[in-house]
Image (cartoon, rainbow, N blue to C red; front, side, top):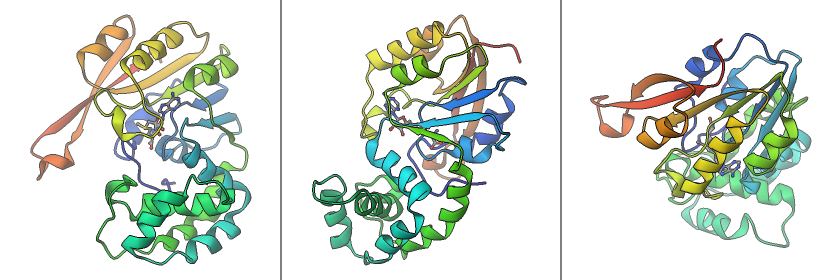
Length: 250
Ligand SMILES: C[S@@+](CC[C@H](N)C(=O)[O-])C[C@H]1O[C@@H](n2cnc3c(N)ncnc32)[C@H](O)[C@@H]1O
C-alpha cells in the first residue's frame, strides 16, 4: 500500500529497490527514520515484530491518533476550512499548549496536506481538500495495528531493539537537506549514526545521497549506487544519485 502523506525525502520512488535489497532472513524490522513510512507501507506485514520511529513528535502524534482515534481525527480535520488564514493558524496551533493530541494531529496533517511539497511552511495554491486524506485512515490503522510506534532519537532506539536477528532500515536526512526537518540533524549526527551502526549485532540498510562523506563513513560496507529522475530539474534531464549501504551479503 501507499503512504497517506507526502514527506520531504520520502522514499516513494525508491521503495521497491529498497525492499529488494532487504536480507532474506530477519525476524524484527525497525524503521529508524520513519517520515511518511513509504517503506513500511510498501512492505508486506509478515507477522514479524515491526517498529516505526521518528524524532518529530508532531509527526508521531499523527500516527498514534490514526491508530487509536481515526474517527475523532477525521471529524476534527473536516472542521478546518480551506484557506491561507487556516494554514497560518495551524502553524501557530499544532504544537501549542491547550489543544488535545487529536486537535494537534489534525493541524499537523492539514499543514502537510495543504503545504507546498508537504513542507508545512508554504501554503499551496491548489484546489485540495484536507479532509479527503481521512478516507485512507482505515487502511493505515489496519497496517499499524501491530506496529510499535516510537518517538526516540535513533541512537537510543537502535540500542533498545538491537539483536542478531534485527533489520534496521535507516533513512536519515540526506547530507545538505537537514534544515528541512523539524528534528534537525548535524554532521556530528551523521558521524554518530555511523558509529552506532558499526557497533550493532543486527543488520542495517541505509539510504543516502551519493556523497563523499557517506562513502567515507561506510567505506567498509557494501555500497550499491542507485539513480532516480531529478524531478526538480524539469523534464527528467538530470538523474539524482543515491546509494544504499548495507552490512550484510544478502
Ligand atoms: C528522509 S526523512 C525519512 C523519510 C521516510 N523514509 C519516508 O519514506 O517518508 C528523515 C526523517 O528523519 C527524522 N529524524 C531527524 N532526526 C532524527 C533523529 N535524531 N532520530 C530519529 N529520526 C530523526 C526526520 O524527522 C525525518 O522524518
